[in-house]
Each structure stands twice: as structure tokens, then as C-alpha cells.
Amino acid sequence: MHYEYKTENTCSTLIEMDINDGIVTNLHFEGGCNGNLKAIPILVEGMTADEIAAKLTGLTCGRRPTSCGDQLSKAVLAAKEAEKAGAI
Image (cartoon, rainbow, N blue to C red; front, top):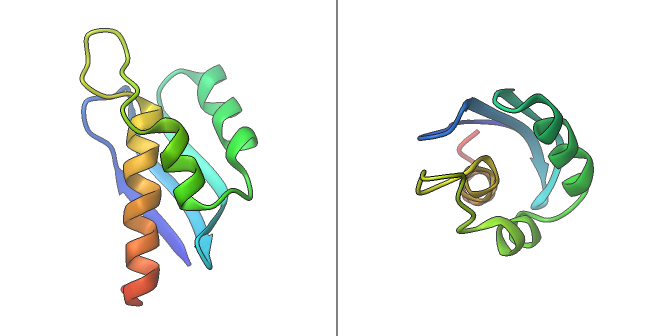
């Protein structure tokens, strides 16, 4: 299933991914720090939503209370719940 998540308080504005049986693939960020946001999808490709969230939840960026990684953790957990509920 394809899932889109609108980020909050980050330079990136949108996270798109596919999730099937809790496994995240085809991750893409809109906006943000180009190099970092090219690297993250490569590093997490094929991981479960729970594995990604365990690694990235709570990371901050500068003075912001969140980061692109933290937003990704929220996005993958929301995608997992949507998949489980059959919402999309």
C-alpha cells in the first residue's frame, strides 16, 4: 500500500512510502536536506516500521523538537496502523 505523511516542524514537507506487511520500501522525502534525505531511504529500505521507529524516534534537529528522522518514525507507525486497519 502507498502511504503519504505530511511532516511538521521540519524542512521536509512530505514523506511517501510503500508499506506491505509492515515492511517499508520506496521511501521518498519532499524538501529537506538533499544529501541526508537521499541517504535515509537507502539505510531503511526493507526494514519494518517498528525497526525504523526504534532507531529514529525522538531525534531532534537543532532547536526543533523533532527532525526528519523523528517524523519518519511517526510516518511509518501511522502507515503501519493504516495498513492494519485497511484504511488505504
